[in-house]
Length: 155
Length: 155
Length: 155
Image 1 (tube, each protein chain N blue to C red):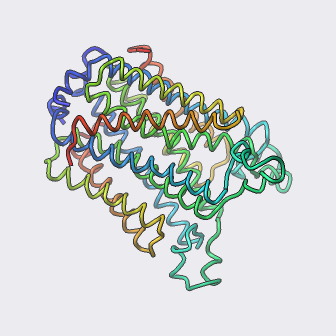
Image 2: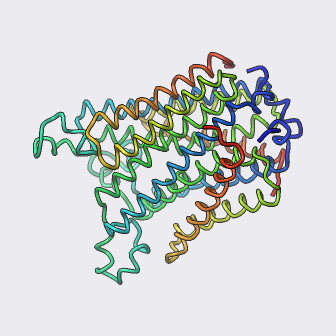
């Protein structure tokens, strides 16, 4: 990790920027999926969101949970739990001077695994599809964390 | 994205640092809002948190959900879902060499929109106040992501 | 914040990389804790996760919440709410040129407090153990945010 200032210009950093942006964009789409299910299933959390459906008891019945809405929300939260470590550790990994091909392998597997995870969650595909795609992303992040700590451990 | 090392000294990066810190600080305040409602509404999630109210059945009745607590928690989670992409994509955007005025416009709209979102959520203001403030922050992040990918796409 | 390009090589940045990786790794372990409780308590959220327990009514009874699972999930969400600000503000703090000893003090207290917070949440230890460990991490992040804004405020 000695020549960070040079490395920040590197193709590895560009690749990190590209894949991070893609996977964060994918996570942002989960908001739209949740909103879509809330509208079509008429299932809301806030009284002010149901005001267009009338007043009083008529609107109150839309303050409910719906399996599809909850599924999309769980997928979104799982994204947060897994993409946050990827971004944080991935940035430090990109600055630690890995070989471009190794870095690309990490980023591609992670982003591919998270996209597949979302498909597996929303379809839903039978297990262990979702479990394995979660594990693939998790293993990539651990592998990057290992390299960061090996390269420049300062306790 | 060719001259990152120079750009990191730029006013754009300083602006990114300032607005990121402000919006993260705002997000952290949501913890205090939730704690405030938990105390005043006496609505807790953990048995050990109700121990000061006595033992057994007397304390157990405070293990409940409360509309105000849940509202603050939803606002907090919505912050996480939207501020995490802003920080990640915003960092790469700040390093992609945008014009200072354009960057400031992005950062200011985002932070303003998120502050208004919190006000709209907690008051609550009638819709579409909250929806539009959410959309403004979302659109800013998409706009930054577009520039990052256009500037230096590496797949 | 004038000489960022040089500072990024500094020991402060190495320390930031090390402690961020450790605390994100700790957060990732919460996924395993939740998975462990879901398996041993047989409490799942998704119908496809209970397919191995048989079909129909027999599997449906495992679609339930469990106090230990919910506790682990609350701990995980609390991590997200607190570690995300630490990573974002901590990065800018590390680039703001603090003294190494001061920076190490901040990073060590934060990471120690979050590890203790997890122990206090999962055991659970009587309050105010969990509350104080949460407060310690919160105060460290505020202290770093104060320095970032003082060093280079650009509104």
